[in-house]
Image (tube, rainbow, N blue to C red; front, side, top):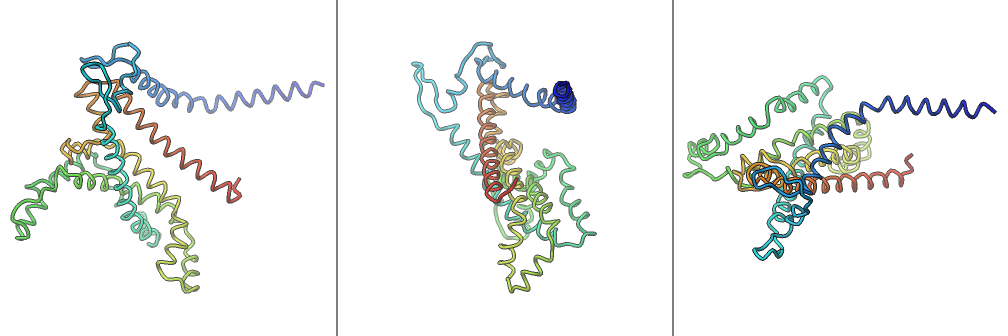
Length: 306
């Protein structure tokens, strides 16, 4: 009769010990993730102070301003200005992801096919740019792309052009900066999945008279698929909120969501609107990740996974 209470006591003790084990992680998540998000939510539901900060008055004006602007008679009129910035950000982020995948996948396959003693050095060379600050690397592109930069001076010196090409402060410059920044985030996940690939699969495909493209499609791509998806997410999500490349290489005229949010807190001093934009961006990213996670879970269940 005393066995059940003793078992319950032991179970509660194990549960308490487990809670103590994960409590540092829970505290860290609460302090550095949940609390800041709650602060941002609170700011987005307050009234903007013209001199910066917020007035502690409940207001949903920040969310209304996302799609509407208030007229002089206090009526609301639809505006697509911020919607166009969001669509531009999605387009540039998507194009950046596509280009980095087209560049990163062949590089990752080539790395995986190299002898083991060379891979460490090659991975080291790919990660070397991370040793320099992103701001410095972006300024280096300014020196290359400006009218009096290395590229234009070289082309004019060779007699290929008479006037400098307008490369800086364009969408192309922003795209180039983003691709340069996030290409390693595509190469490394794909390489990590292909590194453990059994090369005998490639030999078997050749024995079955499969060409290179068919081998790539039937053998390499299925193995690299998790790395491709991970690399795409690691590129697309940060690109949506990118600020440095659009600000410096785009001259501040190629506005993206990251620049828009930054300017609400710095120039416009509209903290509630900046907080609302941040939450909308975060919600969009979470929606994409949730859809991917649910789809992956359905595929796992369909394959009989446990």
